[in-house]
Amino acid sequence: MPPDLDRLRITRAAEGQPRRPRRTRLFLILGAAALLLLLSLYFWGPLQPAQEVTPAVASRIYPAQAYAVLNASGYVVAQRKAAVSSKSTGRLATLTVEEGSRLKKGEILATLENEDLVASRDQAAAQIKESQANLAQSQAELTDANLQYDRYKTLVAKDLVARQDYDTAVARRDKARAGVAAAQAHIKASRAALANAQAALEYSYIRSPFDGVVLTKYAEVGEVVAPFGAAVNARAAVVTMADLNSLMVEADVAESNLDKVHLEQPCEITLDAIPDKRFPGQVHMIVPTADRSKATVLTKVKFLEFDDRILPEMSAKVAFLAKPLEAAERRPRLTIPKAAVVTRDGRAFAFRLEENRVKLTPLTLGPEMGDLVEITKGLKEGDKVMLTPPASLQDGSRVRVKSS
Image 1 (cartoon, rainbow, N blue to C red):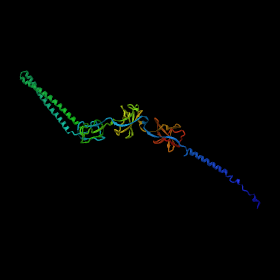
Image 2 (cartoon, rainbow, N blue to C red):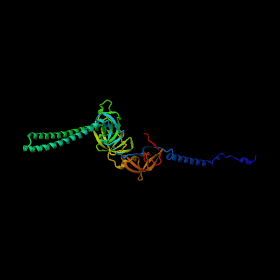
Image 3 (cartoon, rainbow, N blue to C red):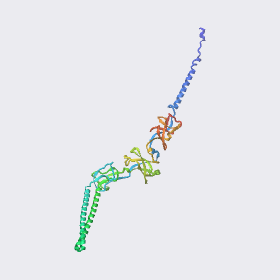
Image 4 (cartoon, one colour):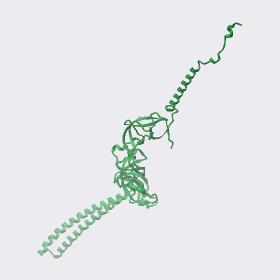
């Protein structure tokens, strides 16, 4: 065996010794990168802990809602309303109105059959002319009797006529005077008869008692109408009318809240049928009696502005206000609670909710209205903002909406 082969040896302790430092550095770099990734995911990524917040919605409100001291509901009621009927009994000959017809005071809305009444009126008018003719005849007779009396008076003084003839002239004069007086009285009686006939004829015309609108029609042409419906199968009223200028809201106010209401107090009226408009109002009357069954007091609120769409018996809501509203305060305004506004570097911001994160949004503020503040720029209706955001909340922070 050659001697060189005896010197060959394998040193196992040296295996892999140069590779150990390189692997350690690689593990350290990977561990640091993983730690940085976890930290970034925790503070800025999906692993960031969500802060619990309370949201509020940017909504449009009317300033009256901020100044309302009391709210009540009621109905629109016409203060002037009448069931129009005839004063005499008769068959309805004409009916010129229907529901919704607008009438002026004194305008004819229906007529009863009145041919007999027209004839009675014409007869009374003719009797007046006859009486006037009789008066003219009696006056002519009186004139002739006076002339004869004057002649006989002179002649009898000179004994040129008999005393009997003079007495006859005196009697004729007195009779002519009585005839004139009778004719004049007959004219008065004829005129009274004409007035009676005209009144009876007028009762056959059913007229509007005031300016108003027909609400309900009860009778038709050909039906019999009578006062109070006295006749069998007779209609007591032809139509029901209301003066729409007398419309008011009658609302029930609880006795416990009566101290919040006073005469001429400004109000705002809303109608379910006209939701796009609000009407200014004023307390007109607090009825001086209470309803013991409901423990309420009836309050009448008048409209300061009218609209043709307002109709009797519409449901209404009344806000009793602490102060009158200016013209500019009657339009809706976009508002958020003042607790949602934060100030940073002298500017106003709000944290707007976007899915599960918040965005710091700059705001332009308007006037305050109680616990609310108007937003003129920065938000739109329906945006959600955070109420009383914690100091740790930042732009882009993850949040969790607090369950109610």
